[in-house]
Length: 248
Length: 351
Image (cartoon, rainbow over all chains, first blue to last red):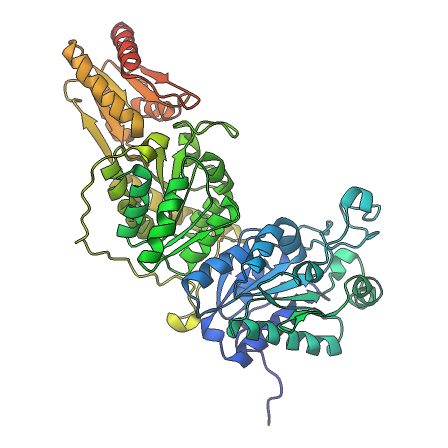
């Protein structure tokens, strides 16, 4: 008998706590598969952030650090500056990266730190129970925008890829989605490219993975996928925003 | 050598090769010194975009097993408090220097001891301590940097060197003992990649299971008790037959030493207690002294912060008085002497 699928070596054999329909599990698996395929599992250090994905520290079978809210890129930089031959990735949600941690993120990108950031954007705060994220769409109802996000009160959603792509020092930026198998295959390719940019010493790399949080959207997993297709992806277009060839 | 340079050179002598920081007066010279000096010894000096980033860069470098430090002054140290809590919770070693300035708020750049509470009683959230060392000469700054790194490593927790603008600017001759070999203890817990140690390492301060968190708290508590028992440092001067005990740390302790001499010339039996570790605090010395003196006079450049620790140590056995100058002002020897005379009369009849 031939084994056709297995848990990646870089993921631990522990139960995940994520909700039904949550796409963190997919993102974790893609990152772990890429680490395995690149053969860097033993010299990779991951930084988990604050939010639902804080438990990433427990799920990846690599050395892991749990960061304070928003600070993962600075901590990754600290490790990388001491150990330049190691592979560093941060795994951050939209609140962590685009709200409280956007300063650390932008400065890390401008310094061209050779680290890889996996940014999971589901347009809502998960861990704290469904409040507005910086990436919450206009009109989207959350616990703290019960009448829908309004530009007047809350300002506009942040498009992270578009913000960071023009920055010198940034080697690779791609926005992918985890809502169907075709896009998941593309997402894995993007994550692999991002890690390769780091391994080749080119610069900072970012993959933004659109994902759904059915629990806090108040939708079934299937409805959440539909919501992503109809609402989220039109506002956050998928594709490569920056590669060594230049800004796309 | 200048105090601020001694901080930098002391760190290098202690084997520190990584500094992350942000400019703030009156600490900036530490960064100037290390920006030049660290590359000469193969180290890294990096200016961050804020104190918030600085301390997180320090956190990362500590995770990677480096002897690492930052330096700042009050407002910057305030910004680092969240991460101090995380460093304590994650049990990571590193050294911070606070060249205190006048406050609250933006305050001013005058010498001050207003951050005593923040340094010794927490500042960040949660149940934790950091080691706090208060040198009073340039030589001691140089030596205490190594002490700070060693203690921080031994107990896997942050250590802070607490000084002020006078200490930073003061120029004094120093003896540099370069022969001493640096032994940096192994760090089997560091997150340097799974290939480089047994098993897999995780640096973490999140414990969602309450019993697990309590276990961590208890481990920290036992560590803190061990430090209290073994690492408390204190110096005294003319204390044996003293009727009035002055208590002061850092810059003020130098002035108070001169006050003791002057008081003795005038027939007042004064002595001086100088805590060198502010946490752990030498409560035992205060407690013992409370039995033999008429009163304590605590002199500080604040409203009375260490004063509260003297009250705890004295346990009501002797009255405790405070004399402070505020806002970046430095107490003058003649004013302290006058206050000393007043309290020695009051203290004698007050019991």
